[in-house]
Length: 371
Ligand SMILES: *Cc1c(COP(=O)(O)O)cnc(C)c1O
Image (cartoon, rainbow, N blue to C red):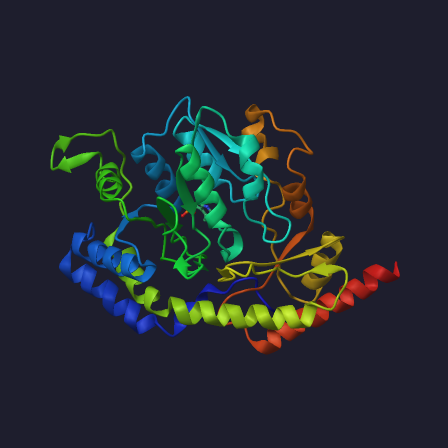
């Protein structure tokens, strides 16, 4: 049996450390935990090489609150991609702004900067590239386009903790970078969590107010905010896990190389490409293969679990029908949605397990080719 993702294994070695840290929170009784949260914020900002980090309740909130803090709302447009987790688009809609899609690049699966010009209108306020699967989007042309047209750049870095673009960490290249600490992410809490990193002090202080009912100080509500605080238990867990993030990302990279060399020769498969400027952290290892369903079933028959990110691009989801998009509007995203197959990827995966997956895929392709 090879799981798609194994949370239990991931936590076994750190169990004592987690219990001690959580025990300290229980003993102190400070679950809202300003000190623990602030310590994590400082460490995460330092890790990213950013000036500020503001911890919030989830990655979705990180995106939404960042746009609120920038004053984005009804009548505005935000450009993003349809090949992403739905939260990117939900967050835009939640502000009252309208999401405007551009397609992804055929090789890197991130925002195609050449498509931005067509999506621009007088209402455009921001661009939200998504660092899909752990690889940063082509940030230089995106930021350059944004500067030229006076737009903000908000990075959806929920899948890219520790990824780099030209030696700069994901999240620090645009005006703000939004992270999720959902348990399955490369840096995951024991529940929900998120953060925004930014070099903009005004943005950071607006975010601090917005996440706590718009309070500038107790009972003094200067903005209409929300309750979106990270709690102390998540903060201490994240502090521990942050110390292991680089090593875990390196292990993911070596797993990816092993998959690459095992699968690279199979003509029917496209392995993920890493752009020259990027340090890919392989949150998801997605191959592209025709006849995906059959391959997936054959792997399942051997006890190998795969997943699909994402079988329906957001522009074709019923919840966003109102946007009026059609089949064929974003052909690269649509094609990828039909072909993507995410293979097991987590740090504790063994070389043997990877070889087993590679072999099983080879067999499945052989059988598919024979019929
Ligand atoms: C996980 C994810 C989010 C949302 O994060 P949550 O913490 O689950 O709210 C947003 N965007 C992308 C690309 C994600 O993968």
